[in-house]
Length: 160
Image 1 (spheres, rainbow, N blue to C red):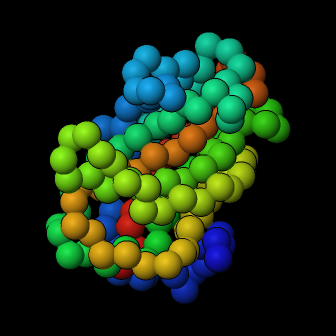
Image 2 (cartoon, rainbow, N blue to C red; image 1 turned 180 degrees about the vertical axis):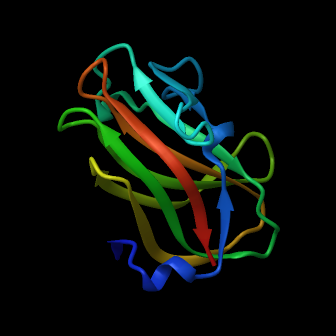
């Protein structure tokens, strides 16, 4: 079940992460059609943009390595964002992968979703909980409808 975050869930225990170390990758890693950079107000937010149309089928991702202690139970993924632009610009998927050896990353969380709010909002994805055993990467699949559209990212969090 996935929901927009309510006032009740604002105070859930969570591990919070800044989006500033995120990178953009294509279907097989870099290079990407996306650009990520600090936003101007506040500069601790991240802005995602592209030079032109980026469809969900192009598998363009923004990924962020998360420092999560082994043995942490993950019950939810929270993404705070805002779309500045036209309909069709949105986050199309929220994914967590887990890696131990450098040749394998297992998808532990996958939420195909359309996050296209034009007002600032936090979305919480909830699925079956899992306990971490390796490194965790948060991945957001992105669609950009027009060249000047943007997606702003604020807090990213794991609800435990």
